[in-house]
Length: 212
Image 1 (tube, one colour):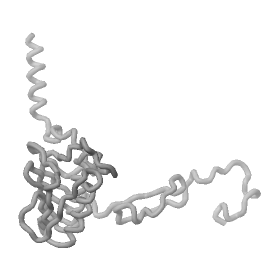
Image 2 (tube, helix red, strand yellow):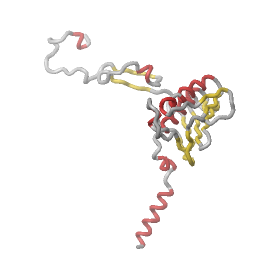
Image 3 (spheres, helix red, strand yellow):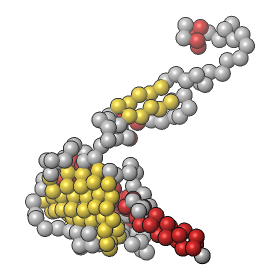
Image 4 (cartoon, one colour):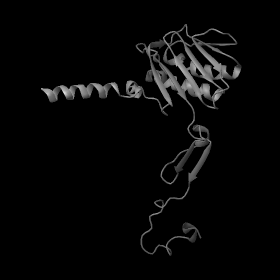
């Protein structure tokens, strides 16, 4: 009995010592943000939801995100430029790095802070991942719950660039430069497994096949 009580106490203290990340295991965001602080409740998107932004550049980012609801939800949150109050507000914070953002979601409103349009864009992509998968659909999802959990997210680039190496000997991919948000592109055009040469094949194929 004594050992049983000790085991129970140890389990209790171990549970209390778990990091905050354990509270958000059910939240999947890619790439994983620098920090996530869970809140209480949910923010729900509806036909009354509106964006308030500071300029046209921010408005373009907001409109692209808002358009996702047009087909999937049957309503389109409006975007207002220059107004102070809104359900979702964009605020410029010059103290943040380029592409970084602070996202505060409460049941009543969402506040997005960034220093440039890239940061606002990435913040909305995070919200997009928190929404139901139906947001990517082309037909109205009648039963979808357009809610996102309350939380505070802080994120910034961990590296100075994004890189991707694609082995075109194994994968056929077109227009990667336009399709992916990368600043460094390296294409591996030669692969050791691309040519399978067996025996004495030099006399069977032209020299160009061997780099001649």
